[in-house]
Image (cartoon, rainbow, N blue to C red; front, top):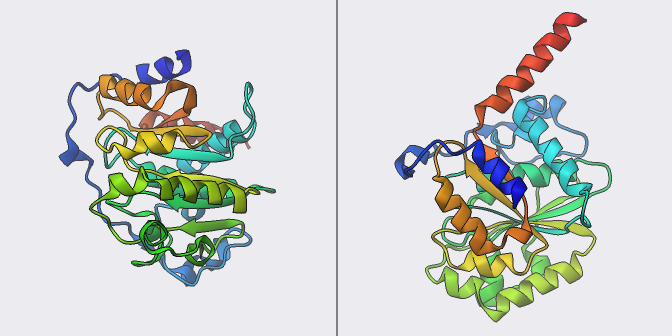
Length: 274
């Protein structure tokens, strides 16, 4: 509880939520051929991917470095076994949970030994597939309603050791689908068939979508994403309590500028000293 409270202290500046201020533009695109020489080993893209995948597009940036730090904290925890299934969520939409889920999954896959599957369970507003250059495609929805097989829905990301399972068709009955017996069966099958992999789940925002609590009960841990200086602390604490504080692996502050300033100040001093 103390770690969460300490993290929230840095964020406690706003008292109201302005969702209109959190709207983001559609992801910009990277043309694969123009960045082939700087693509990490094992990455062979046949599609255009978003430059929001900073782990690839800007591997020396403060954001990319932050995901490496997060990776280390998850892989080598002090007081628990490393979680294999991890839910990434936020209080409200537009806080960057998909951005964090995608880049964290990438960072894990780019480590030496880890295999990863990233799953989009946001059946109302799926976006994970867009970051990796896929258009509308089959996914989780087809498993839950159409009897599609898990192995037929998994896509290659273009990165060695990282696979994707998109959300698929937008669903009006998302709460019922994600809280259903079929969803429990799906997660059970994922853990059984993909037990050698880390499972990173991009979930709906938890404060306004009832199904996230059901998903949270079926994973090993939760990464909670907060848009810095936007979401009220009381709403964050209520959301975390609802999910279960014992499941929270950490709180990620998206858009926290002080981290970037400290990072670039450090490297500026480093290069000047050489």
